[in-house]
Length: 264
Length: 300
Image (cartoon, rainbow over all chains, first blue to last red; front, side, top):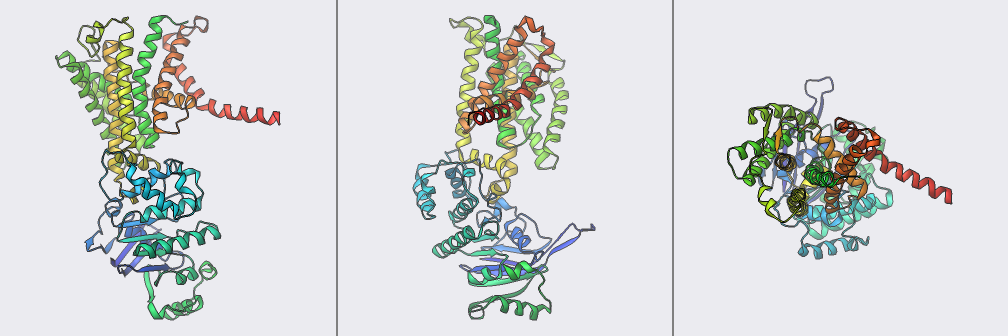
């Protein structure tokens, strides 16, 4: 479970480029929930995720992960409970390391690292089974360099890596946005499959309203650094993109001008 | 051609610079941290070892102290970068400059002679070997032990975390790796190796001198890049072997250049030759591929 309370964050404070990214953002994600997050450019989606992960520090507010106050902790100290997949398919893995070395890095996420061999024989079966579930034939390429894989394959492996060890929350930051449509739908299917199988708690930022309604069991819309609406359960069933737009206009008295949200 | 003495001398110094190249491999390649501290930590290792040996300390203990001193110097550079956010290159230049004064303080004068002292090499001269083969044998052993230990370390959980830190710091942090601590550990390790090289160099040359560090970084880089041109560093162990091969080839090339009378080169031309060799080592691999491409195109 993860609770963010009244988060504020302003970039470039006191400069002409002052930009308030979060203005009192509050959100609670319960155990086992799969929340999709939408919002136009500059709504604060990525900043919110970065704040949860520890990549940026909030000016005020509180972040509680599994009953622990992590507000002031840097990324690496939160990593044990926060797993993450980035938008850039190249960002989640090390291309100079082999597939098994990348997985070995991930299997120790948030744990102490010692001087014993990183790639242990007893990991290999688990690595092979996980990779085989991708149906990409990667289970036979454990010793290959990550850089030899395509963007889609690397994103699929990033997802595996994020789910290799338990976490309180899995953060997905538009992780299909940089992929071609076919690969994107493959990675999205894989995402829902992994989240369902392992009963993960997940927060997925997406640029597409359609996607936000199709997957997950709760949808949150951000606007100007705040949650403007939050729907789940019966209210969310059968909802379409145009309903979302109406909801948004009703809430805010605003019209959405960001075409990519409508077209996505 | 080379005399026996010049040949063994080149191998001997080549092995010492192989240790320097290990250090530079860690900073430049593993951590992607351009570290010039080595120009200061090489004479630091020499100074610490020389002064302690003259004080009657066991030469191996003195050499160990040199390693620790080198690690300290590296840690200072890394902390300047990690904690005070000083650009890595500049942080290393600051430490390097500071070390010049520190080294003079340690020695109390610009150079310390070790010719009459007992060094790590002394017991080995009892072996039934030619005088010039002794350092080659000992340093080969040191380099081999260093190579195996470094290789094992780079394959360990911590070593892998260090490699991830250099390759993709954002990913490393997300995996729970304290990237700042990894940089401190890595740069310290790197300069510890360079301190070791400095200590061994002083003992084999019979003196520590405050200016002996000038250009060590370039020689180390020359060895690293030259070695990579000969042996593609596709794995850690190949990269480490390439460091040693590169350092030995470099020293042999220098010895040959200085020995070839028709070239008219003299000892003072050393740094010029080094710069030319480094340039060639950087440019040649690219030339080789483009020539190969041209040749295959002509065939087709």
